[in-house]
Amino acid sequence: MVSGQVYNPAAITYAPGRNAGWYLHRAGGATELGNQKNIFVVRADGSVIGSGSGLFHGNVLSTVLQPGDTVVVPDKIMGASKLQTLLATGQLASSLAVAVTVLKTAGL
Image 1 (cartoon, one colour):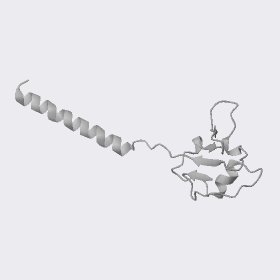
Image 2 (cartoon, one colour):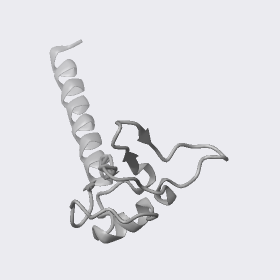
Image 3 (cartoon, one colour):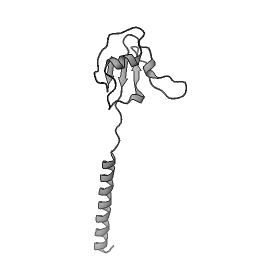
Image 4 (cartoon, helix red, strand yellow):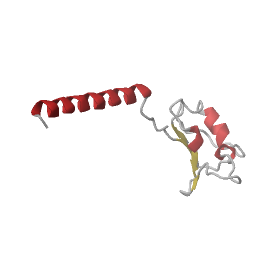
């Protein structure tokens, strides 16, 4: 299986000796919304092979798959856009200006 943020999530027939990258390619590859740095493989026995970090961790896409394994491309975490940040800052400034005006009018 290849699932998650790929162009064609599908069950692909097992091919001996093929790696996760080969299966990912057969599913059309990761979409723009896919987090390619955190792709992982779930083995048929439930164990997980992740991308890991550090000098001695290999690329998960080079992992040779076994029957029943699943390649998963997780979603990217989308941050706030610059426009959203600018609008939120403007709203905060406007609220502060109104509060200051109310305090001045009340004589505080």
